[in-house]
Length: 126
Image (cartoon, rainbow, N blue to C red; front, side, top):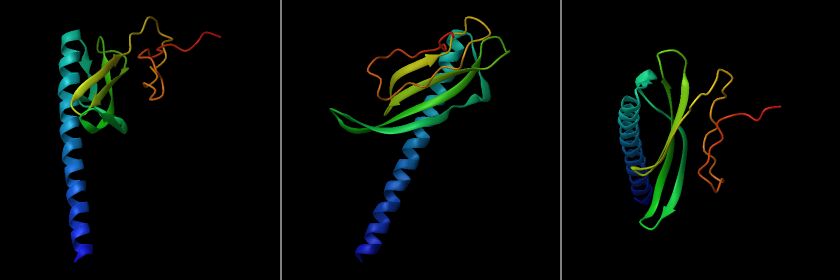
């Protein structure tokens, strides 16, 4: 009896996590699409990809913190990388790569341990 109950609870948790993840991905895709439109950019592939998943303690309890990666283009040529950080369904940060020249490196994803919100976008010159 307890094994069956445990299996049902585990299945329920998995289904709830899956539906929450699907809803967060749909929200992130719509948000990034709108942000790209406002900036005059084109969202490539029309979707976002989950890059990192974590759990964060908030005053309201534990919430999932998701980092989505997306590709966009400024003029239909080239591919830049951007990141969207969500805490539950709240936007924490959106990072767009802003290339200044052709030797621009891909942006580093936000570091969980970093105390600042600054993300280095260029590799140091040697």
